[in-house]
Image 1 (spheres, rainbow, N blue to C red):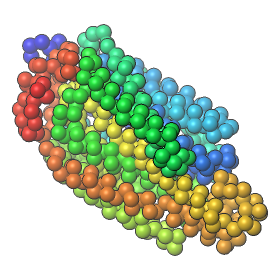
Image 2 (cartoon, one colour):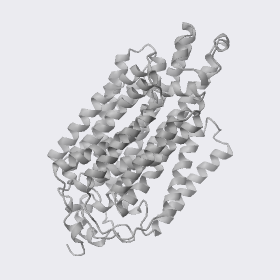
Image 3 (tube, rainbow, N blue to C red):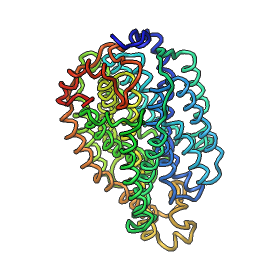
Length: 544
């Protein structure tokens, strides 16, 4: 093709052995990133009890997710501009540093700082893993590898709480962080020796610093006002109003900056494609449901189910048992048939059913029913998550894969941040209010100095009447939140009905584009070649 460099026009397709060796590093990195969003769920009750910080509980999870969210578009764009290998290794190294800082923490602020540093690196692990596989595997074949990555996330969703519980009951919750050091080393070695990306003449990169800063401000202020509003501060408090205003202003200025940026961190071109908009909006809503549930379900099992931290992790296994094979089967089926639209639609419906079932739990519910509900929830997630990423990657050229994948995951992580923050804020505020109201004075005098000092171990030593009060408070604080999320997943289901099923590309070179972007983030040659793709989606060509 005219205007294409040899390196780009002859994109090398990696062999099966090379792909599998690279996958070791990619899946380890994804496991690290996903693990750190779930491993603290079973450890949280003990951590906040030891460090006297129930009122800061949600920040152990939110600090990581927020930092990772802010960095996702940065890693995605930089990967497209300068290459992904060295950037990937750097992200893993930052993640390891944050893990060490958190492991050495002796107070909640130090732990939260370590989690934030982890997030600065963790934002690159998920994005770059998904983009690297797009560099070496065509979209049609990529589905089965994306299914394996989805399986890695499924494993983390259960092994995280399980490991968190085992470490908490055994050597100490600090090992929830120390474990990242050897795993990170494995990922770095695998990427260094086995990843050989296609060489490209990328030229001198132009960084959209203003866009990156504005995006970070908008995302941070959004999560802060949703976390603090109605809890630490009234919704009418000047600080909350100021944060809301800052979110809006930063968002509007960001759009203006991106319209003029030479290499925008999040090109507005992305939002000209129907499938990107639909899958991104649906992913955001599912992210609220997924992370809002994963972050606090193990705590619920410990306090209401009266099980240990390790057993709470084991009780999450049915979710993995459904999510893992579902993700792999769907990925292989998509690669074999090339059809994919039906899976996220059915997945959204199943997630909705799972959330409704979780909202019906009571302290008298059998644990086997809770496990069944989690299995339903996990099956729905397994049908959706990686398929949505694949649809986005198939919509754009290979040199925009990192940017497009990062933008899609950014909004999903915004959903995760909102899910963890809003669910955590409502749950924590409800819990503190209920415990303060219901705990008898004689129990408080006997060793419980308010809600902040309650741990599962302390609850087990209390009289049965006091245990019933605490168990009932935890149940009444969390289960209504699940029901309130159901409308969001229903909206996601409706949006996915309008996705256009465009054929998956069958080669890496087919995704290749000319050597440089134009101002709008695309190339005229690419757009001329793919106008038929745009027409198939019922859209105007992107250059319009």
